[in-house]
Image (cartoon, rainbow, N blue to C red; front, side, top):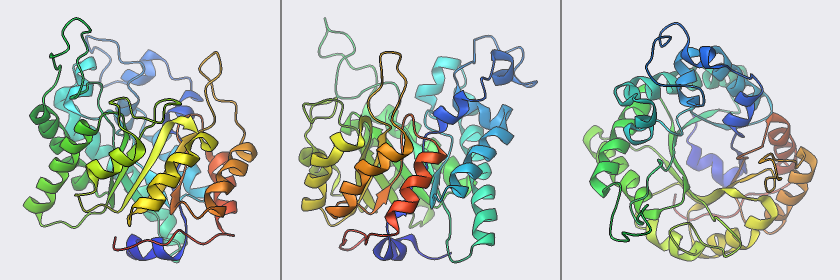
Length: 332
């Protein structure tokens, strides 16, 4: 397979859209989440989307295929919450290796089928590594600001287990995404470097933070530039932002990254801001019109979608990028 680093210098790559948005269309019940294997599980499982890689693998494969048909070059594994820390909510810590491994295998199989059909357009699988539901930088207890619900080492070990399983399952890239606390991300990146060294691997790493509001900062208080500086000591393929904001709101933050890094720059925003019901109303055409600004300003190398985006949104982006050259990158 052609090296993604070379392809990034030739054209803008398309990342897929939201997995959760597509899964909502299936209207899976508690019984669907459980399947036969987990029918007697002691705690509720509805909402554990990562479990669907085991109980509804056909649906996961179908969603991957829809995004690839829409023009995605990179699909993300269904593993956003697949760490022992996040899976503790469902008492499924012992399933973490299997969940990551099987999710990676599903994505790998679908991507390989599309690459075989179009060898000049290789499809890549990115292992999705979410932020967990705990934060290492801040206390969850307003009355005890020094308290931490998780340590750096807890995170490192949890991420390492996830990363090893994703690699075993055959991913091409690792995507540390939706970073609201850079210390969590540092634990993930530390674990990645450990696995790379132990296995003598050279797997490309994408890093994507989240600007949480109009202040232009991450939840743990960093500006775009501070976030970039915090992770720039690690050899990564790309740095960018996803989630929380719509495409147009991300522009000033992408401008900061594009001006100050030699890494590739990525963006996968939400389909606008959520409405009063928590739903996303921005159409594929509306989102593509905003993302055009990224291309015209030469800000990005990778674009895709986060919450609320569908294959229609990705298809509109794929049609758009053909008319633009990628942002120039240094040594990636």
